Amino acid sequence: MSRTGTDRVKRGMAEMQKGGVIMDVVNAEQAKIAEEAGAVAVMALERVPADIRAAGGVARMADPTIVEEVMNAVSIPVMAKARIGHVVEARVLESMGVDYIDESEVLTPADEVFHIKKNDYTVPFVCGCRNLGEATRRIGEGASMLRTKGEPGTGNIVEAVRHMREVQSQIRQVIGMNEDELMTYAKNIGAPYELLLQIKEEGRLPVVNFAAGGIATPADAALMMQLGADGVFVGSGIFKSNNPEKFARAIVEATTHYDDYKLIGELSKGLGTAMKGMEMSTLQPSDRMQDRSM
Amino acid sequence: MTVIGVLGLQGAVREHVRSIEASGAQAVIVKRLSQLNDIDGLILPGGESTTMRRLIDKYDFFEPLQEFGKSGKPIFGTCAGLILLAQKIQGQDQTHLGLMNMMVERNAFGRQRESFEAFIDIKGVAKEYEAVFIRAPYIVEVGEGAEVLAKQGDKIVAAQDGHYLACAFHPELTDDHRLTEHFVKMVEESKKTLAS
Image (cartoon, rainbow over all chains, first blue to last red; front, side, top):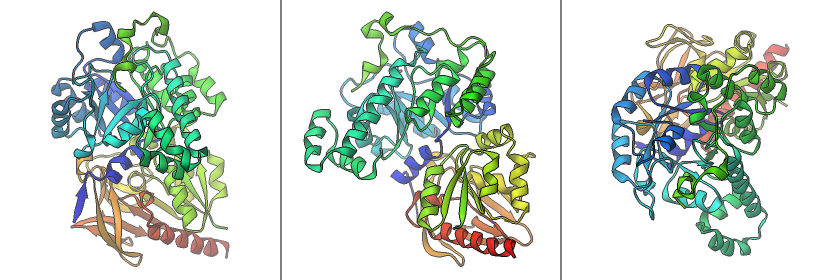
C-alpha cells in the first residue's frame, strides 16, 4: 500500500529545494539556462512580474502550452502560478502534472476573501506571506511551503527584508512566550492556535520558508539567506538583467555560500547591469501586489 | 566519536544531521574541501542532483569525493545522492561520481503528484520501515558484488556495495533512524579496519 499526497510527501518536496534558487522562466530556452545554472526548480510563467506590472490588466494562469514546453525542456521540478482562490486554474495545473503550484498574489486574485483549500490536492502548494498570521493561515489551508511576498517585479529588496524580519521576529516571540499567552497572541495575529503551539515546541515553522519579491543581485540573495530564508525565488531579477546566464550562476553560488563575502565579491565583479528596479514610494497603492491577500 | 559529514551544498541537510545525531554519531555539515579530512563517513543528501553536481564541480569537490570513497571511507547516498553515486544513469551518457556498481533511473516513479510513502522491508536492517519517496529514482540493476537491500513492488530502492550504501527514499524525513544507524555501524567498522 502506498499513499500519495501526504503532508510528509508534499512538505518533503520543499525540503529538498532548501539552499537553492527557484527561477521564473517564460519559455523552454530560459528554463534550460536556469537548469544549467543550477536552479533547483523553475517557475513557468507567461510573463515575469516586472512585465506583468508593465502590461497592466488582469494577470492569469499561464497558457498551458508554455507550462508544457517548460516541463518537457528540463528534468528539475516545474512550478506554475494559479490565481488566489481560483480552484479551476489550480486543478488544471495539477492535472498537467506540475510539481508545485504557487497560489500567487503576482496574478490578479480570483477571490478577494478565500484562498484555495490546498489540503484537498495531491500536488503541493507554495503561498506568499508577510507575517506569521498570514504564514500560519496559509499552512492551515494546506500550503506545504511558504515564501515571503516582498514586492514582486520591483528589483527592490526592501519589502522582502521587511517580511522576512517580521516572520522571524514573530517566531522568536512565540518561542519565548508562556503557553498561557499564546491564545491571545493567536487571536491578535489571526493565527491557528495549534500551529503556534507547534512552532513554539519545535522552534521553527513546520514548512520551508523561501524569500521572494525583489531579489536582483547575488548580494540580495545572500542577504535573505542570512535573515533566515531556506532558499530564494528570483523572478524578474535574472531574465531582466543584461546577462541572465551570469546572473543566474552568481545568484546560485551566493545562495549556497551566503556568508562567504570574499566569494560574493568575486561573483559580483563585472556582472553587468542588474534589472533597473523601482523605489517603493513611486508605487500606487493599487500597484502593490503584496496587499492582494491577507 | 565517529564523525559523519553531510555534503551541505544544497538539499535536506539539516534533517540528516538530526538523524545522525539520533543514531549516536557526531554530524558535520561539509561545505568546504578541507572538511573531508575531518570525517569518517559521508552522506550525500536528497536535493536536486543537477544543482549539486554543478556546485560539486564549481568548488572542485569532484575528485576529492571520489578519492574519499576509494580510500575505503563509507558513503551513503539518498535520493539525489544515489544518482550521484551510480556508475550508470539510464538514458544519459553523463554520470557523476560513478562509485557504486549499479544503474539508476531518475524521476523513475513520475512527477511530484506520484510521490508517495510506503512500508518496506530492508534486508538485515529493518522490517516495516516507513519510506518516503519524492520524485524518486530507482535502481534498475546492481552489478556484481552489490547487494539489493529493498524493493518497492518490483523496483530496487536500496542497495549496498561494500562500503557504499544507497537508497531512493528519504530516511531523514521520518523519526525511524534504523537505516542511518546501519550506516553509522558501517562507518564505525570501517574506522576500525582503516586504523588497523
